[in-house]
Image 1 (tube, rainbow, N blue to C red):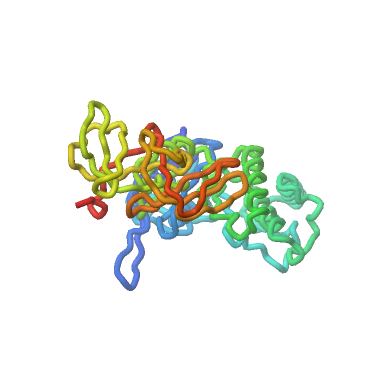
Image 2: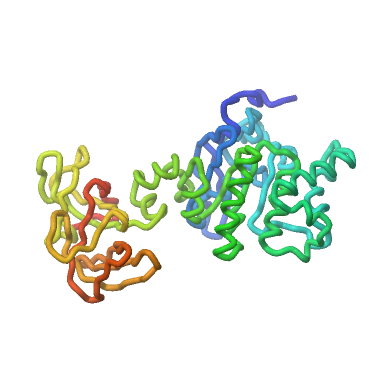
Length: 382
């Protein structure tokens, strides 16, 4: 008898509602995923991004059916596949219309490429006919550029080729949902970048809804339609990569999604719609737009990115006196670490710009790109 909610939410290929999952450890119960909700439309590339232990892989495993959630509901193409509140309703992984690529690829060494890709069809019930299996395997290999290697033993595949085989195997069943658990993390930097582009093209070509898990910010920004930044089992912020990068909801999102300078300050004085913010309890200060509700003397966190600063050699508006501490040449850019009071901040020098280590200078901050948040208790300046 079908679950009473198996046909609903038709606008979302994936719908996750109030998902919760906890684990028993030697130190007690750990809430890996804490009541998170999100929807993924048909054909979207959706990325769960966050540090180790934030809950992103647990979320993916619950979607896949490899973990049974403690609470919430998961629906794939309007079919409920997990609902612990309804007599522990749980559709097993092999009955969910998904394809999955693991970090390890899980290529079977005793099979050739064709048989590795064919395996999901051979164990499927009802099992497709021989001709259909052959056609679907070759079609999947064609999508990943491996058709000519169908007879090659798995032991003679490079890392990049193993990954392509894993993608072909995930796609051969024509799933509605493709789940990817850090599939590029085992590749070297050059191959990783190449495979990133290939994966983007593949997903666009087959127009499949994709859930991608990674801790790599560059991957998330480059590949995703939507990025959900996770922290301590919660989704801290979700949205288009550009929006999340340029307008982070808090200092954690800002610091995790790309490089960010995070500075403790106080509202020293209000000046109309602006405020003067003292850095490190006095001395250096910035004039910035003042968010609503902030009072004189309030401790705040200022967040601005290295690319929104400049090193100048003379005093200027919104420029903090600093000392050049370290320079890191990176080709077209040089990362510059400067000390402002007791805080070390980062800036970027472009092209032929040059400064000397140990020199005094000023760090100019773009006030339109500096975010102001109420300070967390542990960061409050006394």
